Amino acid sequence: MRRLGASSRLRALSRLGAAGRLGAMSRLGALASGVRTGAGTGAEALPAVVGCACPDPQCVVPGAHPFDPGLLAATTDARMIRWWWSRRPEAPVLLATGGRAPCAVSLPAVAGAHALAALDALGMRLGPVVATPTRWAILVAPYGLERLGELLYAKDCVPSSLRFHGDGGYLPLPPSLTGAGQVRWERAPLAGSARPWLPDVEAVVDALVEASTSMPGGGSRLAY
Image (cartoon, rainbow, N blue to C red; front, side, top):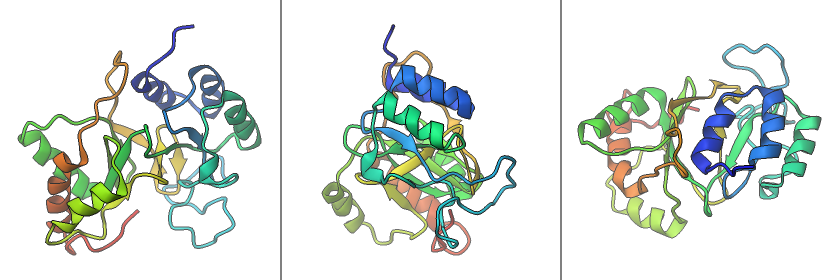
């Protein structure tokens, strides 16, 4: 069987429902740091915002975080993924960020749209962008905490509405359905590419900070 690249795997996952994902993961594998199932929402037909299937009644990211087992169990083992989905067929797809896998920076959806427009105007080449009704996440090349810390330290202000998904983090991927709504590709990985193009975090962070601070409230509200 031909081995699919990361971009092809991401696109394939975006087209599948829960039953299809189970079969596909057994054939396609996952991204470098592992894909695993998340907490899910615990419902078959969902409104825009619902509770989480996890034990926390105040969960701030319903259906978009690791459940059981924990994040460190992320794997590319098709047998393990098949077993997880046999137990929780409604579970979303989570990308364990960092390591050799993509990292991401996410921000509220309105600010994300402004940031993408600004980056397009600059002629910046972007990679995949994941979107929910409330937040957009720009996938970037892997970065470490030390590198990120130096980058943010040089900024006059970093809005608290920005979230950084690096080592030890996670990000729901299409076609997951979370408490924030349906996860979709705002910009899907290009078809036929062996690996998705990922810009460096330095190349995009200025536009993300500017877009967040220019929104009402100065980007201080942490919106999921």
